[in-house]
Amino acid sequence: MIAAALMGDPALLLADEATTALDVTTQAEVVALLGDLREQFGTGLLFVTHDLGLAATISDRVYVMYAGRIAETGPADALFDRPRHPYTAALLGATPRLDAPQGRLAAINGQPPDLRQELLGCPFAPRCAYATDICRDETPADRPVGDEDGPLRHRVSCHHSERLEGKSGHE
Image (cartoon, rainbow, N blue to C red; front, side, top):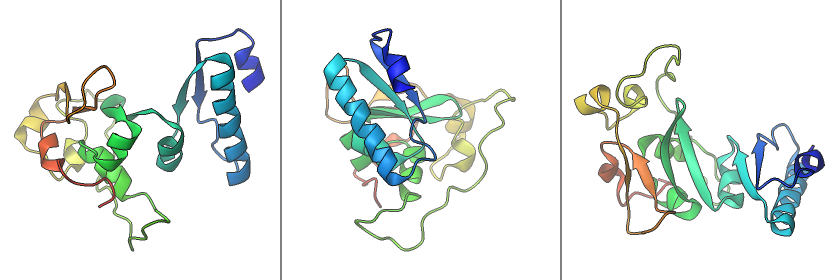
């Protein structure tokens, strides 16, 4: 499938869950092949995955989505080290890590929203520990955070991202 996708010499290759249900060895081979092809053909790669560890390993930039909206985006190292959206922080807290066992993993309370209903305010508000009235009433604007500058800057859509400032993504 990868060879067929590259036949038209695309500027961007979309790999949607390309490694889902693969064993770890085969997954590593596919990721290595995609990396080699990126370099060889100068093709961009948009890699869609639910595997945060894999995203951290292969991505230059990460977009975290919730309910079809971008909650946070930024350089992979900044996003994983210093998440600024409560959903990103919750995902990282619910992810097992071999380098720092943490006992029980944190659960994300509540249920995802019903996307058949109109979403008002922040879609994560019903599940968020930081939510206030503004979160339920107003959709947060996408805004830059952190000290970085330029087009690859860390950005977040959250009314209270400053409450996460200084917290590690692994707490």
